[in-house]
Every structure is written in structure tokens, then in C-alpha cells.
Length: 214
Image (cartoon, rainbow, N blue to C red; front, side):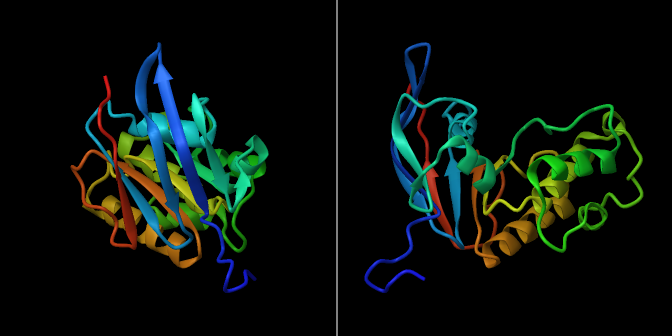
């Protein structure tokens, strides 16, 4: 347990992070931190770099400069893989596998929360009865719900959510909010991107606004 004079480091600590594409700056330098039990709302117009920021944090893109620490340690690839779960615009699932097959496959790759089963996660997101349906047969909203089930099963303490409300109805939006609330209550954290069309989840939140640089 951290001493009172040495509080726990942020779950995510970013300093001087910069990224450019074709020699044109996309964002940065950025300095921000996210503590356990809170969310960071990343706002900005289309093209401001919100998705790119999450892809840099998860390690899919390489930053030009800056540092990313997780729990006070440099975010090397293995550490990112353990600590971060990413929900992007694409589902990251296999079109020719069934719904339950997809979840079991990903749990085999990334592990899953204790006491959480894929079947229970499907019921939670409203996909009970779709266990044997192929991913390519699902609607955009159902694919998003399956992505949320995958996220819920992940043991990672830090969620990176890129426009998580897109393609969801009002019940789906409330589902995202409940999931984020539960993640924070369990000591995790979340980064949530939005262009302002939806309200932020009703949790302890910091805000990072990205401006278009080019």
C-alpha cells in the first residue's frame, strides 16, 4: 500500500505525447493523467485526432515523442496488453465465427475477469439467444453490443472507448454508462472519445479537448 507521503501513481500518466502523419501534426504535445476510479472524456471535432490518440495509447501507432506510463511504469507492449482493453470503430471480431465462438476465442487470447462467463456477458448486453449466430449476420448495433460483451469480460483495468455510443439505441447508451460506472467502482478507469453528440457517462470525469492542428 502506498505511504501517505507517496500516493499511488495515476493508472495512466501521459507526458509530452505528440503524433504526426506525413509530417503534419495531428495532436500534441499532450499532458494528462487518469486515476483509478475516474474517466477521461476526450472531445474534439472530426479530424482532431481522438481515434489516433487511442491507437497511440494502445500501441497500434507509434508516437513521435512523449511518454506513457501505466501505474508508474513505462507502457511497454506486454504491459499495455495486460492493462488496456480497446473498443474501436471496427468490432475486432471474426465475421465467420459465431457470437459465442468469438468471445471464447478472445478470452483464450486475453483472459477474462474472474467469475464472469461469456454466456453471462451476452445476456447482459442483450444478445442472449444469439450465441450461435455468425458475426456477419448481426446488425451494426448488435456488433457493438458484442464488442461491449468482449470489453466486459476483459480483466484490463483501463478501457479505451472510441465513440462507444455510436450505433446504439437509448437502452444501449444506458448499458455503456452502467458498464463504465461498474468499471470505475471496481478500481478501473476509462478514456471515452466523443464529438459532443452524446452526454458523458455519469461518473467522476476529467475532460481533454483536442483541437485540429492542420
